Amino acid sequence: MIIMIVCLVIGCLLEYYFTRERITEENVRNAQANENDTQKKGITMGEQIKICIHDKYWWLIIVFFFLYQFGGQMKNNDMSFYSQSMTGGSSLSSLINTVGAIPTAVGMLLVWPLANKFSKSKTIVGGCILAFVGSLISLIALAPGMNTAAISGISVGSFIVKALGTAPAMYLSLALLANVLDHQEAMYGKRTDGFTMAVYGSIMVAMSGICNGIIVLFDNFIGGNLETSRIIHTILGFIVEGVCYLVMGIMFLMMNVEKFTKLDNDTIINNQREKCLAEGKEWIAPAERAKLEDAENARLVEEARIAQLKADCEKKHLDFNAENQKFLEAKKVKDEQAAAKKAEADKKKAEALAKKQAAFDSLSEEKKAAILAKKKAEEEKVLAQFNKAKEEAKKSGLAA
Image (cartoon, rainbow, N blue to C red; front, side):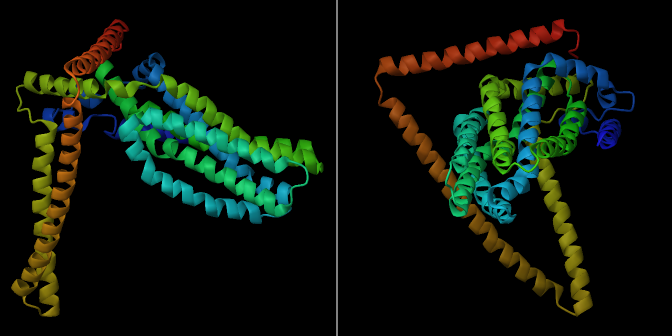
């Protein structure tokens, strides 16, 4: 396992040195830097480590990933031991794994609407609380006099509740990591993707072996004591992950990096624009560049389609114009359906905004003034915190 971890870290470092994943793409596209350009050279691994060490948000997200992987691997690797000790066979673990996939899939549909309303970190905190409560349900199965059916029902129910709670962490954590890396770029003018993903990958690889070792150690210590085995494997299979999620939830009460998202994005874009203009090159805003690239991609796709259709028609002795007309007519119908669907979605969004604005307009002038004043105060507070953090980054000597 140690050899695998070492190989993984070396591989991640090689990826760092031979790819551009750590470079903001707009910098490359707008600057078109030459081989001597400092941005293309990137930053050293030592600089990345120093930036990460100074960033509290980085520590929060990395400890989160450690606990997430530790709890998850402990649960996965212990489930067969749990099933054997509780029911004397492996059918319970198979049932849990099958049924447990359902709440995970349902959670995928729920987490992003919740995240858009409450923020990613708060949604994860709520999920962590639910996961902890779900893990505690498993303790009921240890009550005296429980038959196999009752144990199976309680175990599956505990797993389902816990799985729903783990969904936000599963689907939102990497997006939150992106917020952390963007915040670092806004503060220091540098990104730490290379080092961060090396640490992340090492955690993923290491946890399986570590958790297996812990499980085997306890299993050997238990011996043939069935009652002790039930308690130990309930703790390892359910409670350990629940406690990990409880700690993660408490930690993420301090994970407020999302409040800087707009300021981070504006700062990154301003830095890109200033660098581009300083080099005497044309600046194209990311949104406009995306439109141009979409148009170019569409043109290339259409050229490839026509070339392929001509080849197919020649091979099958078909009329190219007739076949192309069929495609264009079908495409027109699909485009019209997509446009109608988008128009309906835009209409609903506009109606929701209008309803919200009408509710605000219906308030008294005093209440409206109080709401606006509170919003302005919050924005000024966030801006002050952002500027203070940026000043501290400059004083550290790590900022570009």
